[in-house]
Length: 87
Image (cartoon, rainbow, N blue to C red):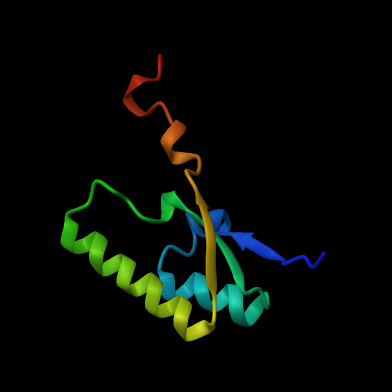
């Protein structure tokens, strides 16, 4: 059974948030083709035009570097208490 080595974008959430940065790192520095996209990288509360622009940038950068987004997950930001924290 063949295996594919991949990486999730959790490493990039706070440091490499621009698609052009993390796609280049995954491809050129790490030599990884398969990506698990972290939902924290795309804020759904932004206006539609910004979301669409970010999706286009992600798609274009993945195509440029030959990356394939295989799956996604919610990440940690969805489980933060924010203002509901008791302290």
